[in-house]
Image (cartoon, rainbow, N blue to C red):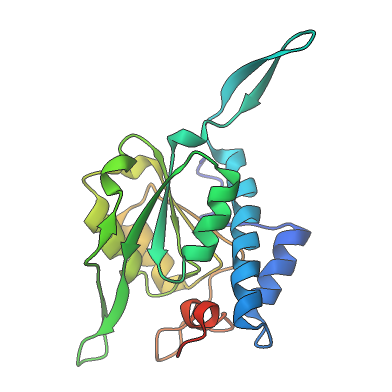
Length: 217
């Protein structure tokens, strides 16, 4: 990414924007939310694919051969941040069919003084991320502490120069934290960064995407 490109990159297409609105709408049911989140993941993957390394692929046809520029999806690692990221990560996997999907838990906690930290205690598949283009999938990049804990837990397996984060919505403090600690990271979002409320949720954001997906509180 050149220095003239803003970070985060705001993904913008009519279809993606329609899904974005449905995922922010308070009237969207949990069943619809899961479906829309998966479709949103697909739409994001198609946009991010433009920035991924390309390969020339040739196939034999009935009358000769055909070569096209494609993406080697087996060279992509998707990090699914449980649990909110699951439907979105499955959408990415629908586009990048041979990608490695790593599952990792990360959740936010609060110190007595009100500041936040994150806990990550489970990961599966991190060792399979070596050498791959990495995309962390999480609907909300709010305070950023959960994403930092994810990166720290997987840092021995991933190339930080190949790290991307894709979110539905972002907050200015979270973006600042990530880029201060990992300046080579490229962040994608469907909405421009906003502020946080006192509970650490993004203003005008979707709320708790995990609760909305799985009908919990």
